[in-house]
Amino acid sequence: MSHYQKQNRGEPRKMQKRRRDDSALTNVVSLRISDQEKRVLEKITRSSSKNVSEIVREAIDFWLAKRKKLCLDN
Image (cartoon, rainbow, N blue to C red; front, side, top):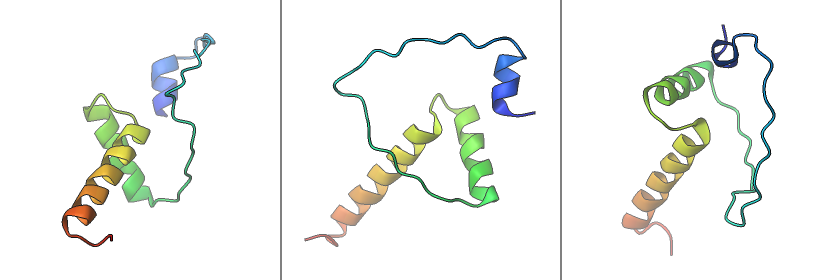
């Protein structure tokens, strides 16, 4: 059973209007990951209050900070 099915339990989904926020993130990046990487991401989302996008942004921030610390970018 998928994560969506567990939450929805067959009930009709209520459409919520999204407020337009000037600070909303609008850029989309698509990538392919292995089944194992997907399972790890799903496990992290279940054990934290973060969604996949937040986890990936955090990982990118971590990688960029490490790269900057090592002075690999000029």
